[in-house]
Length: 190
Length: 330
Image (cartoon, rainbow over all chains, first blue to last red; front, side, top):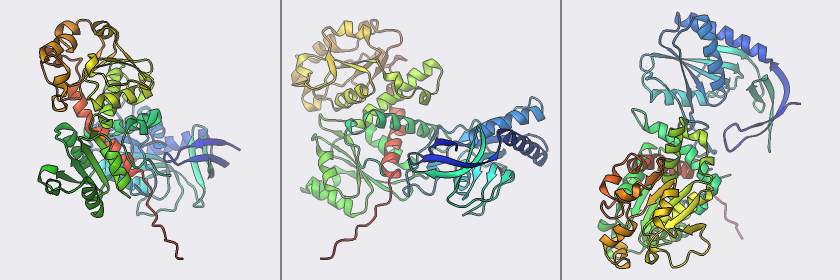
């Protein structure tokens, strides 16, 4: 069984023990391609669109989606950023919450169409924090959400606009999106 | 698990801890570059600054940091407080704690005062903002942060990519009134924890009475040491602590130990000059030298806010809720 270190939110984390594969890396690439087409279709092109990947899982997906979008729409100037929501989380003080990386939002978001990209949508609390964080970079015209996996168990009224795969899970399970595709498993204590 | 409750000394952090502070501080430096440099992270927390000794930049810097984290800030002006009526430090601290204040940032002219306060408090976090000749940990941390920033800029890399490996083997020369300097003590601990070589250059009368156990060398020849240094950390001659009586005259001090234009010419092209402020131009640093691009005093002040945000966040934000203990019933 695949085993890998996973520091979900530092300094917590543990060893992710994968049980079964949900998507292969080729499946992920196909899903990203479809979602990229949907983004173009929804927005009638890429004018004013900026992709923002959420640290850490969403960042590589945003980069890959941007590559696909540039192929679809030609050599379009497409802004890509990354966002760390640690300072906006609602569980500060309930568990250790530390930033993973420095946020990089390269442009003023006023009037922009922001496509947030994340690997797994679960409770929705990360996205809630991300929406608050985005506010501090200007008033976006609209914010859309693209996720590779929607695993359910929402705790807030948040829904994705673009989904790679809907994956019913049990709460205690864990979904990991990596280079080698999407795996479902559990997080064991180190 | 929970992080450390207090920041009293750089020694509390160690290499890993310093690396973590610098890493988190980069995220806060990004917050500071925004048009609205404020995050809701410490909403509802109350932070009090207790300064029993005068300060401009440290106090402003801590208060700015706390406000940018959305904490509420109380600043106790000791001159107009009950301390003047004879209230003891312990009673002042107990008053503060009884009000449910989450963190106390304390500066005191007596070494060890913050440690003593930390023993008295039950739940509040204590941050040492300078105690006598002892330590000034946040100053040393922001000096490290600034040095790394300059090194990264020269490499065209992001500071966080450098980690703390860039300090390995770095030659740091600390110049001046080491005896009375809390900044020097914290810098020695911080730089040496990160693997830098620290050398002191100071008139014998301004060296501490004993250097036993300190990971430092003493420069035999100041001018020669200058030509070797990667970082020159200048200290202020602390007239308020009686430094004046340790040197024959200010002019003689400047001639022997001041960073004059003539001495700057000995520095390597890429040497960085730091000063914790306030600078006394014409004494430990010539006015022209203070304005050179290699002198990073304004960057140090600017970085102070991000570093102090990181400290406050790591102490107050990383904690787990305190579970009320149920007393045993006999």
